[in-house]
Image 1 (cartoon, rainbow, N blue to C red):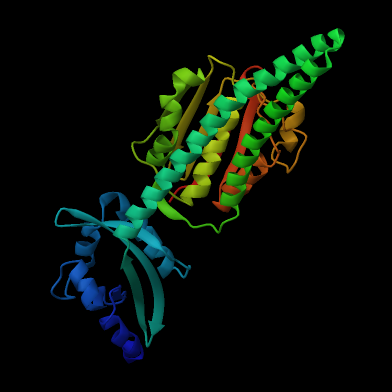
Image 2 (image 1 turned 180 degrees about the vertical axis):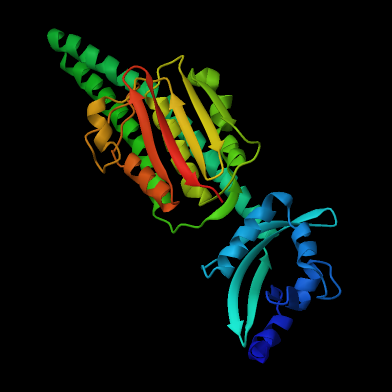
Length: 355
């Protein structure tokens, strides 16, 4: 144990939590003052199950699986869990290490209380998710009338050409140019938001997926009547936990919903369903839209593929969206695929590994 003394000197004065658990003796051999204070303990003479019972019931299996992975020799870091203390819930981020010395097998842990950080990050992510959903709704609402204006100006242009009214034709040309430019500006802005989000380093945290998707889509539900599309969101479990980069992954969900909106006529519906089983989680986003022609199926996820199409109300596409969506899903060790039939709608599926 002497080899750890220099580290323990620093740990004794640290505000972070440090502990050492001897796997052979099945007991704690060290906890620094911050650790004892956090768990409201007076001594390290405490059974591991007492600490485990302080962890939120929904997180216990997750924590045990991560500790087992560490004991099995895998690299494990930034394991988050909720701890219940005297009626209050705190959040811990734990990094365990396995050490072997003189026949001892030690689980060395470092942890920090991230309750405030977690609350601030969640607030920012919720605002960001809401911003993204509102942007997509506004883009859909604005692109519709602007597309209609563009179509009407083309009809007017044909009539004025016959009348040889140069000034009127010039004005109509200006209106057409401005409407097309405005639609492009809207799409470019959304594409840039998506690209900037995708370009930032992946930071995964453990989140409750159903809650996040419900929050991200509540504006779509609130705007059902105006959008003339019926939305629904269901799951086979009350709570579904995953490890994701919330900002990037919710951009994926928003973009898939936005695509569904683009290709679903008024009076249609978009259904979101989350299914969890023993090994995986599958998210499906189903619409009753115009579907994807079979000739586009094989290249839909390619960059700048010829599968890109304008939406029903003139919404444009760069062809990058689906490629980035697939990349972000794969960053999460997931897979994405779809089923579609012309005039019968499209369903996108995202499969993620279960914690």
